[in-house]
Image (cartoon, rainbow, N blue to C red; front, side, top):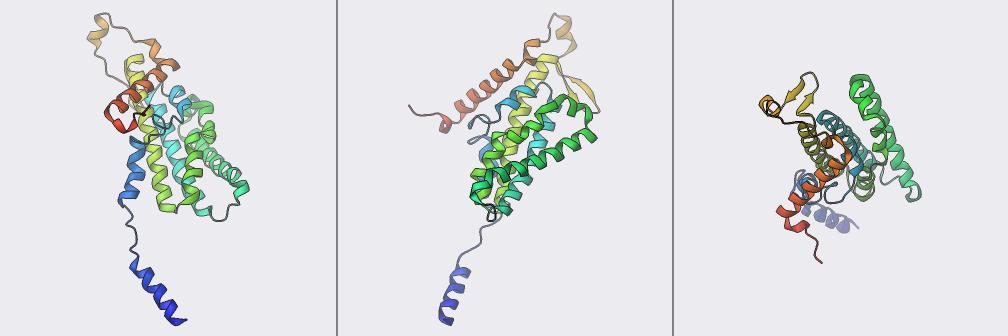
Length: 232
């Protein structure tokens, strides 16, 4: 019996521990930025990309909210993964994400009431965001806490850069400036353009232009990354 125990200890010592930032863990952060982007590749979270990207500050606040929910949600689900009965796992996931979203919503109302009012119901709709529920089910339920945290951060950043990119394009061409908290509007189109007859394109602040902008980003992304082109 003692020989078997000794052999097991030798086997455990022979297996090296995976570094915290191994190539596998780094891919959890980098793949959602391009190869596995939740919006442009998985086509999830489109509703918020269309609805709240009229202003950059709204897109940034929504992105930070999703980052908070995904990071802590993935960690909580990962910690509970071995104790959650399979039959009620979706209910538990909804309870976790709903609790985090309520906390985020109350913080926004307390510290950023103006932006909270503009975002309106869309903060609450984070509860039904397919990206978050998908990562809970596909990753956090089967992996340890640290990789799950990295997965949450990576997917949240992948979601965020699309939102911010779309908002920058829509606000610059729709309003001629970008609004920053505490700084007011920062103009990006010279006044001489307006004097020469240039007018802001009000079509850019409508939801259809958000969809077109996302489509252009997808086209550029796929033209540069051949791995994303589907074979017939």
